[in-house]
Length: 440
Ligand code: PLP
Image (cartoon, rainbow, N blue to C red):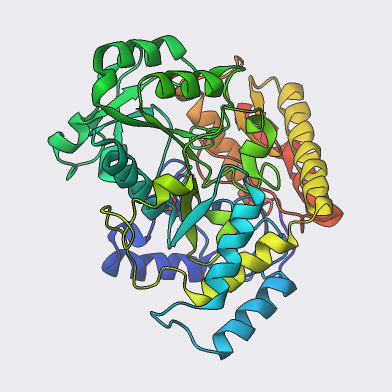
């Protein structure tokens, strides 16, 4: 393998693959952020990953600060997960009939998050939020949903609505192909603004099925709820007979063994009605879930009238991987995530300060992101008010030195317990040059 270099990297094989990919895959990628649209340039195509490191098809190595956008909390190809996958795969790939791993994974989720009495397994976070929404609408007999600007819940039609800044407004579709009628049932509000929530409920309370929120948002960068915000959502939804859905697809089992709920939610009476999970609980394979109170979950087919299904739901290989990943999340793993994230965030902040680059680091447990603006970020409008060109220069300078950050200024810098001192030092060594590149 080539060592990390401070000059530009040679990527002929990635360039060739991107040309081939563009011919047969829209934009050359199967999920838009991978195309580097926000930062420019060609993405490295990854050949292999182990621990904290990615190796691209040209043999360049990178410290990975994407971690597959969250799932790889133990690092890539962790032996425990690999073994579980191989054992499961030897016994067959998909049965379309009940199997033991599904039960074990469901039990693991229920044991970890107290208000979750039952779960239904699905294959992606998008499916989890889509199904939770249908369940909330079915259970309440209401159609409208409240979401917050800057919160991403997957590419569910009703949740792809965002809105302009400021006051409560009916959402306009964020994507072509989302029916206006679908977006019209979505009320988009500014995050961390309980007055806006109160106002929306004062106007439409009897029509609102649910409020869905990221437990602690990570999709506009890390913007934790201000004290009292989540409890306020609980109070307002309960008063109006609406459900509260906490989307823990990103935070689940990463912020703590019980996700964000384990950090903020365990005061009595403030439990959300439904949760959604994904990422870490799949260990890098397609496994996700939604769950909550048993009386609500009983509304799902085959017990109740809300239909929901999946050919690959509860897939035996994916559930084996997820179970091994979760069981691998020991207290030592969470302690290491704290050490690694603070070492990297502190060094990044120090170097950006030295280079005179305005920035702010925000946290949710060990989840953090670096915003390229001087003021704290409390909502999506704040997050958008960043120096995006500065981030691009920083990003590419890190990449050239062998550190793969998420290719967007609105993302978490994900770390794993496999980020050992060598990997952390490689990041720290790259930071001074990258911080200087911002102002060069
Ligand atoms: N919800 C949240 C909070 C997410 O971060 C994501 C994905 O990033 C999703 C839902 C959608 O999950 P998936 O990409 O598995 O469909």
